[in-house]
Length: 135
Image 1 (tube, helix red, strand yellow):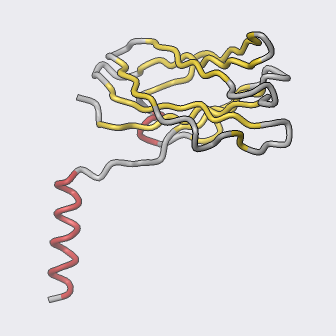
Image 2 (cartoon, rainbow, N blue to C red; image 1 turned 30 degrees about the horizontal axis):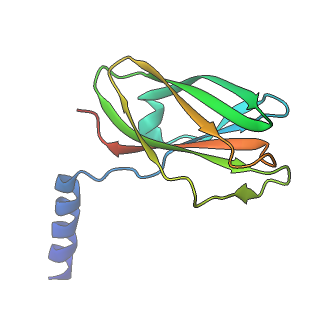
């Protein structure tokens, strides 16, 4: 009986379309200009590529821009947010920035921009996750 329950749960999960909730994280150091992909979901790595990262200083407040390119011919519904850190690496206002929706059409390029919440922020991390599988 227990084996039957486990098999039914596995079948139900397969039909429900288990989606990987891990996302892609891009780190941006506005002091040095260094940017790197910290980790990438295997699903997003095959569908979205980071093609450019830039930063600017607007009246003492840092602004980071990440350019994303779709590697799929299908529309993708994503969510992104920029998390900012101070010079010590501590997150500043981590819960203050909600995820924003991004729709990335097939083979399209889009940018995501985030402004630091205060002048103490020197590093940014873009968090990107999938909200729906490609249509």
